[in-house]
Image (cartoon, rainbow, N blue to C red; front, top):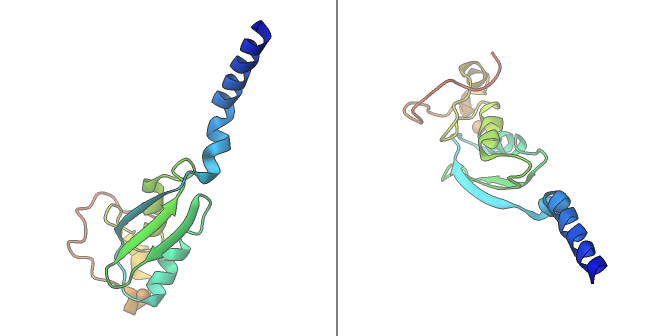
Length: 126
Ligand SMILES: [Cu+2]
C-alpha cells in the first residue's frame, strides 16, 4: 500500500497549498459598528464606499448609525473597511475622516463630530 499512502500524502499536500485559495470565496463573516452620518445621501455614500472586492453586503441604518458589513476577512480586513468609509468623509467608531473631505460634504450631511471618537490621525488625502 505504499503508493496509496504516497497518494494520500500528495492530496494532503495539495490541500495544504491550495486549501486557503479554494475555500476563500465562501468564507464570509459579519461585523457591525458605528458610522456617523445623517441622511439618505450619507447612506448612499457610506454603502457605496464598500462596493469593493471582498465585501458582499453593507447596510447602514440611518437611525441607529450602525452599519452591518458582510465580508471576507481573507480579502479585506475590518480595519481597511473603516478606512474606506472614513475616506468618503464619514467618521467611524475607529477612524476619523479627514477634515477637508468632511467639509466638502453637503451641509445637510455634516453630522455632529464632537466627541465621536478619541482621535488619532485622520484618514484620507489632503
Ligand atoms: Cu447626508
